[in-house]
Image 1 (cartoon, one colour):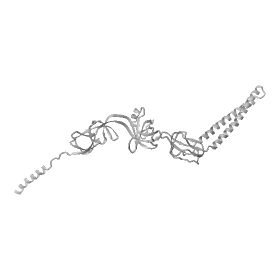
Image 2 (tube, one colour):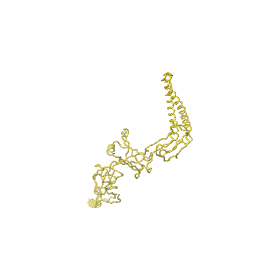
Image 3 (cartoon, rainbow, N blue to C red):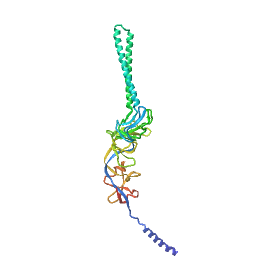
Image 4 (cartoon, helix red, strand yellow):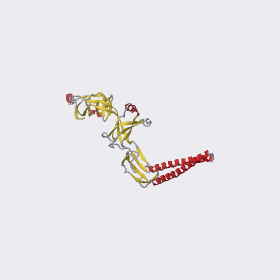
Length: 362
C-alpha cells in the first residue's frame, strides 16, 4: 500500500513535466514569390492557329503540243508577270500560219473574180441578155467566195494564236516551284502534270478558323479590317502584322467554326506558303486594365482568389473576378488594385495568419 501511494506523485510530476514541454510554436515566415499588380493597355484577342496561303497560285500548262526547246528560269526563282518561262518548237505552227495566209490570198482572188462576175451579170440581166437564174447563180458564188475568205481569216487568227502559245510567259508576279518538265520533252495540253507552279508570296493570306460563338463579335467590330498578328507556332515574338480581309459566307456545320483570312504585305518574306503560325485577332483594346501574373490566381470552392501581401508581411486571401487571360497575364475586373503585391508562388503553405518572406519578385 505504501509503495502504491508513493508512485502517484511521481506520475503526476511526470505528466506535468510532459505538458509543460509542448508549448505552441510561433507562426513561421513562408518563403514566397510575389508580383505587383500593374495597369496596362491589354488587347482583347482571339488566339488560334493559321496556315499561310499564297494570294494566287498558277499551275502553268501548255496550250499546244510540241517539243519543249527552252526553259527560261531557274527553279525557285522570282518571276514577274510577262517573263518568259518556256518555249515550244514553233515551226509546225508557223508553217500552218503560212499555209493559212496562202489560202487567204488564193480565196481573195477568187472572191474578186466572183464579185466581178456578179456585177457583170447584174448589168446583163437588166437588158435581158441573161436569165434571172444565171444572175442569182453568180451572186450566190460571190457570197460563197466571201464566206471562204472569212473562214481563211479565222484560220489565220487561229494559226497566229497557236504560234503565240509556243512562247509561255508568267501570268503573275511570284516565285516558281520545282521544274516538272525539262527541255527536250514533248508536251501536250492534256498532260496532267503542270510544267511549273507559281505562287504569289507578296502579299499572302493567313487562313484560320474561329468558333461560331465569336462570329458576332468579329462581324460587329470588323469595319475597316481588324488587326491580325502572327508569330511562330512554337512561340516567339510577332513576325508579321496584317488585317482581316475575308469572312466566309457560312459556318462549317461539322466543326462549328467559320473560316477567316488575313492579308499580309509580306515584303520581307517572313511568311511562307504552307507554313503554320500562331494567330492573334484583336477585337478591341482594353485601356488601363489591372493585370497580375496568371499563376497568382488560384481556384477555390468559392471561386478564384489571390493572396495579397500587406505592409507588415501578413497576407490576405481575397476573392477576385478575372475578365480574361492574355499571354500568361490575368486581367482583374474586381478584387485587386494596381500597385498591390500578390503572391505568385508558395500559396500552398499560406494561411490567413501567415507572414511571408519574399524570395523573388516579378
